[in-house]
Image (cartoon, rainbow over all chains, first blue to last red; front, side, top):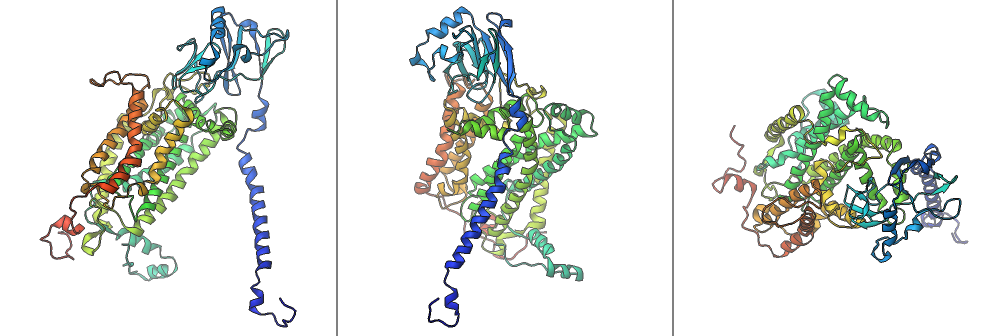
Length: 186
Length: 426
């Protein structure tokens, strides 16, 4: 509106800057409101507090005989604890890293006990195929480790993927030694 | 096509209503909708599908009154429905068999559309809405299959939700967000139940749009030539209501054979074992209607690429109206495309077969040498995509159609027909 104007004309009203400001302010408030309401709607789908709380189990390794495998349910998934034989350990050590799809040394897949050294006898891993989450069968497949019946993935005695569609080695869960023979997973 | 409304309210009350909410007019116009006079039985699946949706919603709402969505009780509650609830055996089987019948009809409906070019202008939106309905049906069927909480339910859900884990970077978080936990569990079962109840109503809404679009542009027909004159069309009622009713009766006979004599023939025995997170069944297979997609998923040795291919197999349907550029709609007049279409159907069945078998097994057909199902699924997958992405676009440029009739009336009644306004013999 110019200084010389006495009457407010329609042309003056069409100066859009005030209206633009109101549009933007209204839009921004509505967007913020939608986001504030939307976030709880999205977040409720995530893990509930009780699901998060029920997250750890303890396992006594001394009860697993050589060549045996313990299967425990942890966070709705099986955890494999395998007391490997000397032959299986030797087989895991003998593998060249260059032939692995997801290269990892066997000892890197183990966690050190209270003494500070890793015990290659006990392999602890999440017993879930990294392809689509099936439970692989033990002492099976072309590499004497595990075989997934769903889509034919073969794992070796260290739980490393060797053949088939799975992209990764079987996952090592977070665990620690409470004493010489007891571990806590989770 | 839809033309001006011909409805005349006869009674004062109907007139009163018509001025306020013309809902009777809408129904009357629907029943007298001018439909091409040459529709064959392949055009009855729309009506059959509407019936399927009603059957699934009715039986489903009743089942929900008896079902318990809890990992400790779900399996037993379904068994209770089958054994203890009055007529529960009937309603549960009707719902489970009904899902298979629904897919049987939808596949016929889709193949019909593919053959007669029903996706071409001006029916692209009808086709896309149809694809959306199909996608929603797949989601609903998958969610519903989880509910009985048998071994196949559980492991099927684990494998399918595992797809989301393949998304780069955020995959695992996304998967756990969808599951509501670290793995398929109680939270998952409850949300699957809620969504399984919701989606059929979304489908019903999409069907409304699908039919609305159909009534706006008019039906396609076996010769693919638009209806131009009144003599090209017949009133929907009684001509097609009767035709649809007959087709529905035949369809219901097939439905009843499965329902009463083979209720488990289309299911999987492993789903009578309660879900066990520690034990994967030796051979996980989806329901028959997902087998071709399952075969495509397994046709490549990469997790992410397999999923993308499988999704691509559905996405390609959405864009089909722009891939098939040939001007002639019906393949009756496309001598080359017709054969490629036939091979396409064969390949779809082969993919289904591959999906049901273990990939490493050898195909038991003499003359194929030592071909495994894995190789066969790769060939069929290649053809599936080539049909849409190469064959149809190329044929659109090079194929010469054979001579087409001038009009629907001429196609039906021949050149001798002169009285254009003649009603069919009564």
